[in-house]
Length: 326
Image 1 (cartoon, rainbow, N blue to C red):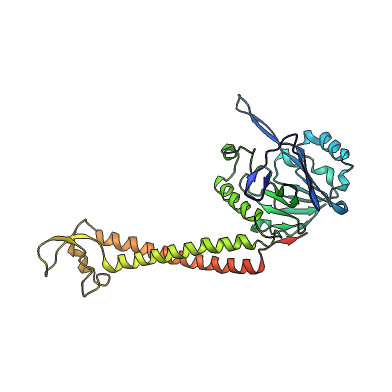
Image 2 (image 1 turned 90 degrees about the vertical axis):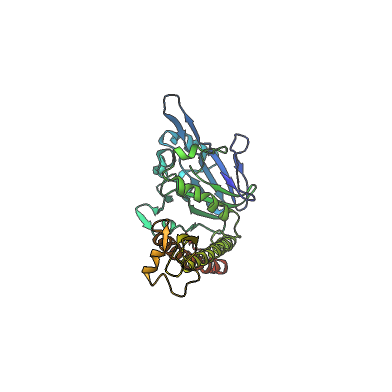
């Protein structure tokens, strides 16, 4: 479980499983675990988390495996709740230790991966496009892929620990440095999700209005623009001056090292006969033209994309990022 302020993980223990708040409180009904065995197998079970709110706005995040059925029913009963009192059930992903008891909550709205349904009615979702699903101003569901392609996490604001993120198997434990890699379907995506979570957890009041995060993206895009301009300058200069080589021509019959095309009145790019001036290294002119032409195209593309991101970030700062409300 993650908490805001400075981004860090809260280790779950028997003494710290409840996080009161207003209007929502978060209680970890069962602490998940991952235990490698000597024979190469491993024991694992997902955490089960209850989010309780006013007016019976109760949310269950992950239901545990089928073997947790009796435990889950008792844990709810101990809190005066029945399965019918759960308004929303979120399965952070489709593994059996996380969604093994969905059948207990047939009347609840369900979010499993990117699917949102109630009974056999499925509603449109923007989670697959990378946008949060807004439950209300305090709770939203975020796409956090990596462990599987459709992992989601639940963000809750206003608890005693600040903003909490119930993150499923994004992390295996508070000391998880590398274990998650062995269980990840896409390590590159999962690594990229972590700073994205930080932006969400430290964003403005409403989770859909991530203005601070979008402002940060403008800064990174501006760095990209500066890099693109520098690359364009280097590429243009490299193409204009030509390569350093051991050369000679009719006007300078004694071979020497230098940049023969830099002060030439003609353009070597238009007259390939001039390329024969360079004797060593072989084909250095072709290499120079190919290298800096590629750099010129790549830098131009980078400049366009970064400018688009700056504009997108500006609109994000003004209007907030996308999201949908339940």
